[in-house]
Structures are given as structure tokens and as C-alpha cells.
Length: 223
Image (tube, rainbow, N blue to C red; front, side):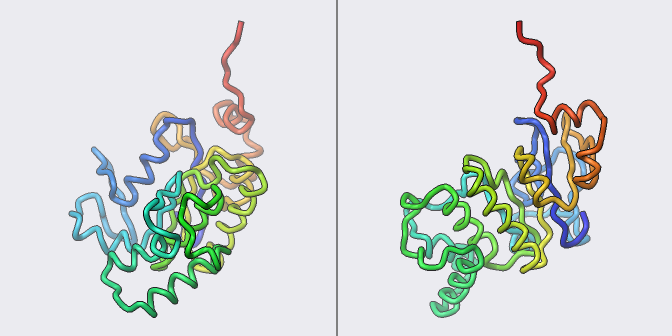
């Protein structure tokens, strides 16, 4: 990947895209192959050695993965406290900055159950950027959201890329999102990267495998 770019990873459901993200952050271990983060091989690192790497990577899980027993403030503050930050003023300042960056100021006392789907994604993203990271991984950031909320999330991904100068990998099935946010696009097919190129190259290709995915054709005949 190129530093500062947004790479969109496409592929069929169950094709391994989310698993790929979990390998990148060390939540799963590959059976073979290599993963290099900032010139360091991470597949052989133990949990202690992985901690500094994970601090540089923010992860937005598909469902947000908020703690239902914690309010918005405590959810966003969780990574800071886990890493030993004890100063209440520092925590409050960083939480406020993160919530402001995702347009969630004033919602810090709410519980996750009282948030809409889009708001949950924004809070989860505020938690992911509080360090702040050099890389953000997004797992289906617009899944389950209506087109208007999806558009706001897409704009937020672009805004954070420019504001934080982060490198982003976005797993999605949403072709509208893909063409809105991608600097480059990769297509995963049968466990391998089948295509890598610009959104313009994706749109113009005549490759039948890629065209079926982009155009939403199953190739099945229904009798």
C-alpha cells in the first residue's frame, strides 16, 4: 500500500475480506505468508510485541463493537485507559477531540442502545482514532445504513484521511462507497487478489469476473 491512500477491498460474501483485516491487526495468525507493517514483520510477534503495532492501527468493526454497558464517553476513552492513561483532564480532552472529529459532540452521556446505526459507527470510529492511528481498517462501514447516512460515513472517511493523514483499508460491498472514497481498488477472488487498480480502471475493465461483481450479476440461470 501507499502511505496516505484509501484502498477499497471488494469481494464476494464469505470470501475472506474481514478475515484479511483481522490478520492485519494480529487478531488472527496466517498459516503462511508475510505481513509487514512499517517495515516490520508482524506475523511472528507475540501479544506483548504486537501492542505497539496495534496502537498505530485503528479498527472499525462491522457492527461498531461498542460496549453496551458503557456510555459514549467511556467507550471512546477505553483505549486510553487500557494503555495506562489516568489523567481525567487528558482523557476528557482527547475524547472531546475525537467526538468532534466525527460530528458527535454532545452525545457523550448517551448509551449505545440510544444511538442510531450511523451514530454507533461514528462513536466506534471516534474510539478508533483517539490514539491517533497511522492506519485505519474499516469493515463494512456502511453496512445496514440508509443511503443518506452511508454518504455521510463516506464523507467522514475522506475527511479523516485528509485530517489525520492516515492510510485506510476499507472492506465493502457498496459500489457507491467504493467509487466515492477509493484511491485504489482491490478485488479478492477465491482467496487471492484478482485485480488492483484505480476506480477508473475498475469501471472501464471488460474482464468478466470483475464486470459481474461491479454490475451485480450472479451468472446463475433461474428456471
